[in-house]
Length: 527
Image (cartoon, rainbow, N blue to C red; front, top):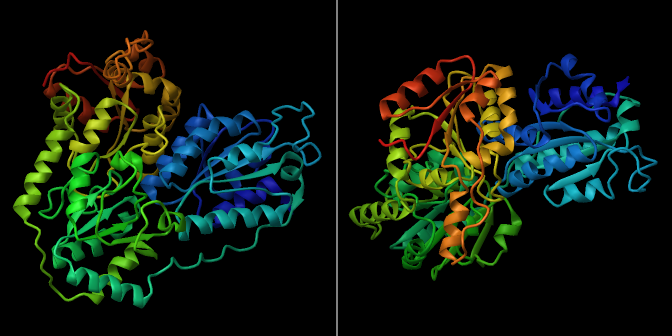
């Protein structure tokens, strides 16, 4: 028998965890006793928020759970923001935290890191939260979290363990068990949907991030049945944006409402159909709505699906392909789709002067690059106008909308994907300063990570919004540091390209380096 903290690391290793992000402290130090022995790599963040975003980026890039070790009280509250982001964007992040001794829980005795209810705070941003009061209950919570990640809509979990329990001897965890199979649509549901597809003249597929595991059967389905496709931002690339049947990134606003209203069948797969995608509360559909999702709450929401089906996207698309004839015909015109796709892209160029910079970036980066972006105007426009040919190439903090996401998430993504895969962080000057201290982590790891910093020396989105609402701009300009000097102080490389040729060279050099590189661009950069 070993202290429970040791057995937790052993249990995670036995369940496939290879990397843990976190920060040790006096309350959670027992979690660190067994990490090396378990064969797990621990990555030291500079803030629990950074650790959480790293785990998020690792999970998105790898498809595996991201895990963090955090301390009682402020460690947990610091991690709540990235956990909230993971909840909004359906990312499997497991937080293992210490909490006060069992005799002190929720007592308000003024202990170090005391909270009225640490568990209650966490429950506001995670799918599963629980307290392990001994070895068996702790391992059960971990297994419940991992099973939920594998078979349901993947949302974060927090397992807290009292300090005295972490240090107490415990038996080793039981062997891991295979998670239950993901749900499949019934034969009757598949037959119904197949009939709807065969009868429809203008069937429309709306694809979300929950359908990214189904690219192959969905591409086959679109090609064989001539279905039109409208991706959410997270669903871009499942069907390439340049596919003749894809409307591309025109999901936001009135144009997509008119498009959806013209369809005589709508099939939404793996998408929340949320405000951050559509910019409105309703879809505008008048046709039958087939809703395929792992989340039962989505199947019974305000959109009132006529055919709610709880199923995995991959199995559903595979089953539907098998139930339909080899070819189908619809009234969709590829030329009309192309015109709408082009109009949607033009409409997306809402920030004057940014598109030439975006085009220069796209030309300078390898097509296979994986991009993690922040809440900044250049990312808002680029994630729409940058063509996606494959899924999982662009990750953005869409739902919760957290500043400071790009750098630490890109670190986690780079750890997951390795040196050979190009990974890029794209941040604005203000949001970058939320987590810039994580540069130290990237330097320690020797990551060949280019960090594209768009520095317009202001909160430009907020300034524009104030002007649009007839508010005199206020508190939207802040004095920035010398970012080049700051990056070098951390031990990173840094440059400020003046031309597209300079930018291409800077990115090429950064991808071959053995330390991260800050590449600062300003509005003076003119392609």
